[in-house]
Length: 473
Image 1 (cartoon, helix red, strand yellow):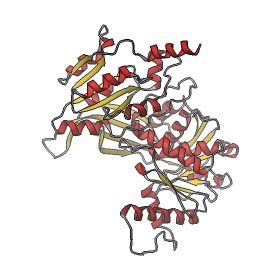
Image 2 (tube, one colour; image 1 turned 60 degrees about the horizontal axis):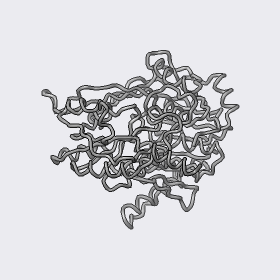
Image 3 (cartoon, helix red, strand yellow; image 1 turned 180 degrees about the vertical axis):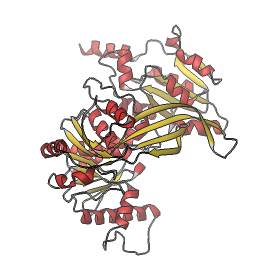
Image 4 (cartoon, helix red, strand yellow; image 1 turned 120 degrees about the horizontal axis):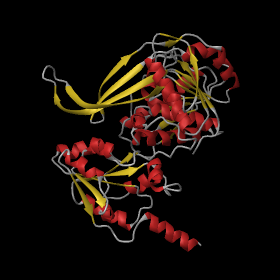
């Protein structure tokens, strides 16, 4: 759903980088992996990521954040300005940068630099806050929320996303969204108002953990004088507390992908939905669904491009597959098995698709389906396509017993995704027999093979849509 209400985001921006490569050996001088063939991707982080995600929802977003004129600050401006309005606060020090080093899409190290902090509020920032209909405070403890705290007290921010290095939310905040570890840290530091009473735990470990979260959330609610506290629990969803009888909002599916940025996705969604008039429970439920889909689609590291899409609302994110494709491939390969991958739009799943995927699965020990994003389908098939949004297409594919995992790609062809997965066999339908498959040469680079499988004649999404249109008329 495209957002309609504008949103002001206050908080600390970061510049995030991912250096992604392969690690096939250890260094000769130390027992550390050698990550080779790295590609670099740069994106907004911290409050800037939350603001970008809200803008990609179709909202008018203003970000108030500390920003300098150094190389990192200039890069962040370039990434953000096509999407939102920036109100810069003066800084002491350089904009913080965080660089993740990943091998086979798994983090192996992180490099941090830049200790900049917002120095003071400005007249422009105060004016934006005075007129703001809704506010998200994304406090990473680097000064932006601190210097604007006097101007936030009367604003009753919709959502406050806290960090242990930052200060408490202002009294009256409608919803506070700490992660599980953050809630534990905050509750342990409460003066004279402990979340737990020290009684010996009883019941199952899962029940004891939920009880501890509920007690911590209730204690934080009282101490912060907030309207509600939603503690995010990763794959289990979120626990929403108004003080008594907490509501557990489960995740719609298990997510095993890269969770980087999931908290920002949760907070941005919740703040936007509250700004649109949703109840707190509705906002938390929507935020859990969006955060789950975000992780399943690859997290912050999978954000593709920064060019503004001409005002078009973003495509709904796909629900996560039941297994992380990279982890599945690594597990099958470690056991000496054969990895098969197949790709396509799968706009209207039909008998031809099912027959192809069933045959592909019989060629190896697992099948990963690479599916085009909505934007990719639109570029290939034209306006009006896809008929089924990405979330629906992935959900239907995951329901097939022959499909072990689903991976989404945003490019016109899946070469980049295939280079990460490196399947042993790449499958396409026989209707591609007369076409050149660019993936074939790529597969040969690591000893893989592209193959065509027989395709049921006369079955295609285009034919089905034409037949349906004819019947309707």
